[in-house]
Every structure is written in C-alpha cells, then in structure tokens.
Length: 124
Image (tube, rainbow, N blue to C red):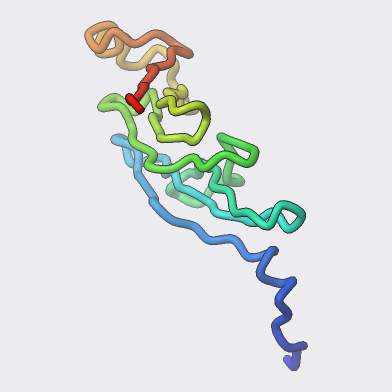
C-alpha cells in the first residue's frame, strides 16, 4: 500500500497509550490515553478502562482538557484513584464492577463511601 507522506497536521490525530494498571482481580486494566487539541495546540490525558480478555469496547472514564494520570486500584478493586490537574485534587472514582456488593466489609474498613473525594492541597 502506497500512502501519502506524514504531514504535520497528522500529529494532532495521534494518540499514545501509557501507564497500564491491572485491577487486583485481573479482569480490568485502567490506562492513560494522550491526545492533542489542534485549536489550543495542547495535549491532554484521559483515563480509559478495558477488559483484560479483550471482550467489549474500552470505556472512557474521564474527559476534557485535564491531565489525568497515575491510575491506582484500591486493594479490593472497587475504586480507582488518579492524579488530575483539576484544582490540585486527587479524585477517587468507583470502577465498573460486576458485583457491586463484593468486598463491602473491606470498604468500611477503609472508610470509603461511594463517590467520595479526597482533597489534596499543597502549600504555595
């Protein structure tokens, strides 16, 4: 197949995948996809989630111009924490899970409630 030469404008359509993190049960992987916004001439990073068996389509967890990075699963795999450029806060999102009732006792021990947020502020 003969194609055209790579053009500078093509760079804005490129996506890169990094920071894969497999859930404790091994069924899901969270990862970062970096894309580019041509009008703003800026990059952004969003989190995605996919099944490790390749079944189904990947699911986008975050959107927008933020830089969402460093996904980490909670020990029971129910929550996914990540760093974000949103107002210097650490967000905790509930991961998609087949069995919502699984590991409730562990959640209580950790003191986490569904949809909770941990605020991290730094001085300066």
